[in-house]
Length: 349
Ligand code: KG4
Ligand code: ZN
Image (cartoon, rainbow, N blue to C red):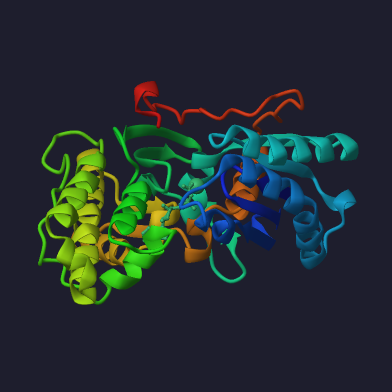
């Protein structure tokens, strides 16, 4: 089974070719530099970039995979959630390709793709669904933060999600308040590496609450007030490093504690994590330490697959087809607000 997938839900144009669970080639055209000038993603610009990039990216990926379009078994794309017009580009391109080739089309849920991405690993990257076991999964990205109970393969329900800002958003906004360049998450991570996480005490929202929800806007606000009341800190590189480390410690502590607590409550032996924030070195280290201390197996998405990519979309589409899922109609439209099973509508950003 050979699947070509496109991912255009936000600011990365991505294409992948996966054959029998093995990632033959995958490419991501990032728009980070373009949006950096505006300090955030500009949807109209993202859409234009997707239009510009998807065809050359497909050609390049197919050539590298040494796969001709006639050899494709199916075509897939992210159908939602995401920026409406951005989604539209990848979805309609993939549906058009499926129509022209007379192959099945699979519309993939972006977070479902993240959810199963920790099962892709090795060199070359390949899906290891034969090793699947029930798990509690943390999805942490710029747009979403959620805990999901993955009871069986392709059987999952959301336990809790963020009530306001996502963890990645909190990293990005805190970094901006500390005067760091866009995109804030990775830059804050780098500065935090040399800082003292105990120098400043920021709130750990909802840490003690008996639920699986998150809330990060209060933490962001407390960073705002702290730098407003102590502007001199921003002129001291050492203090900025300590602020970064302290903000990161607060976010990571909440994410790790709530994930481990849910795993214990549900009695699973495995924890997984995916999404852009899973690149964060402290989060990776703290999850590893917490899981080791409790005898839990930890599967973190590979760094290259933490941020948005099409390999996770192609792998999931292939698996869905293998498991007998029906193709998605070529008439189906994008689903910008598509919820994951069990995700409360009210929590959707
Ligand atoms: O999954 P992703 O690529 O896009 C969404 O679907 O949102 O995640 C992007 C988010 C951004 O907020 C970015 O700042 C954050 O992931 N991020 C990080 C790190 N690398 C990326 N946050 C903290 N530390 C990092 N190293
Ligand atoms: Zn994502």
